[in-house]
Length: 388
Image (cartoon, rainbow, N blue to C red; front, top):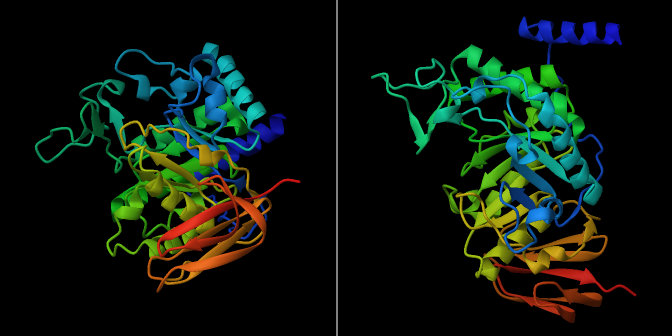
């Protein structure tokens, strides 16, 4: 055991000296296929499911679960105005956090729980007001990200290493039961360098198996540089913020990036909309099922990412029997699952088509038993095989 500790220490010191190469992700390595559908939770549990004593059961209905460390009961070992300066957690808070994670995984063994650690920005009370790590403009004024939150100086190597150590501290107490979520990925050359440095340091400190999800926000291009270092990319209503407004190209692009990620993959495709707009939810949920292996979330907005659980998400399609098809303009896309089928007809199709089914199936969104479905352009269907 002592020898192993010295070997690990040597690995870390070698990395910090620039002597360790992080192994690239093996995009084609075998990994258990996830059961579908996969629904994400971003901080806020489903509003229409039980809360209170059953909040862990609410979490466990989801496949990708993003929480703050405080949601698990963890606390940083720090004083006032210095929570984010801490690189260790209060030991007395660890047992309860591990118990919560254990409960989630007993209810849903396939769930990926991801703890947020701030990097791009932080709350104003988490560092002293005059700290050097706040990003400042040419006049020395701190750069606000949103009210009560300022950007951090990613060009400061000491800050980057500090965040890597904080991530390692979370990983040390949660082990494989939880991964890490990092918000606000950025794409300027200097930002890419800082993010790459952080992720490489984290891999050196925590090893190759730590699951990491990063949020790309509205962006859906230029992801190949980060894919080998992470397990998932979150697209935050990005489908309506593409430069070309080409939805089919968007799905083809994010599916291609997803194949470059480390295993297991935990990407999230989030769509904003009114809870009453079932059609909007269905369109992007079906496209996510057909074209990707990602988790999906239909939420109110970027404010807390609140959502309601849709009845259709209770369907159990099982694992995919076919890989995601390529997104082709004007074509019908079809994907087979162990217990069902998902269909999507591109918006550029010339007209409606009727798909004959080999057996009667339940159309999930209408709850009707059908032997054929007729699809108009820009529509689809999720069908569940009837159990004997």
